[in-house]
Length: 281
Image (cartoon, rainbow, N blue to C red; front, side, top):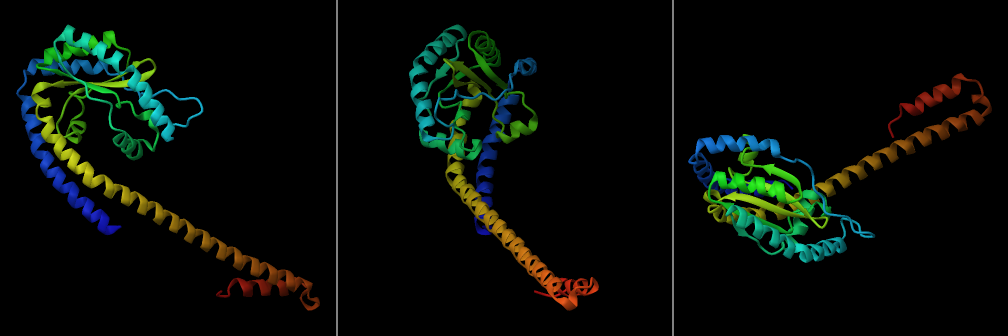
């Protein structure tokens, strides 16, 4: 396990060094924006809706079963056209540029559910997703207001003005995240600034590399930890069983003493039990 942790640490250091180069570019680009617009965007934090959105349950199917994942993909596929229609209205009203990819790949969804959500597929609210790209902060704020007014938003996160620690954790990238409910199913819409979004491809190459190298190592550590925990539990059970066996032997010796005529008086059994208690077994 130590070798696995050491290799994981090396991989993480490499990925962190590369990503820090992109992070510096993000921060520089953000500072270059008009300060007044950046300050005004801070007020949009009051419009955050910080809840945990969930996909709907399916009768008779548990949320960690493969059948539920199939149910989710079928229904999101059915409602994707309606989602795209509403996004086109957003595009026409605000002038943002839309990027609407296909549904997230199933293997990636399985990985995310496993690593992040303890195999709870109802937490996968970004399988159907889209990006709206604004060329300026005023346009981004216009789109922000339009989405809140015209979609059924269940979660809104202004990640442009998060705490410094949260922004550093994302490598300096800033955006706005919405989870939108459509026919009871959740879709994700992200609002991006073009000046940052144009650099995102470079960052994603590093993240994809890091994910491909690091996640298998994390999985291995998780499995090793489970095995170690199981071995520790079995060791504890064996020790408890040994204690029980010793206690059983002592009690049997004590009961035997009481049955002997010359041990019928109280001091003798007590002395014998004291002898048994202090013996090394």
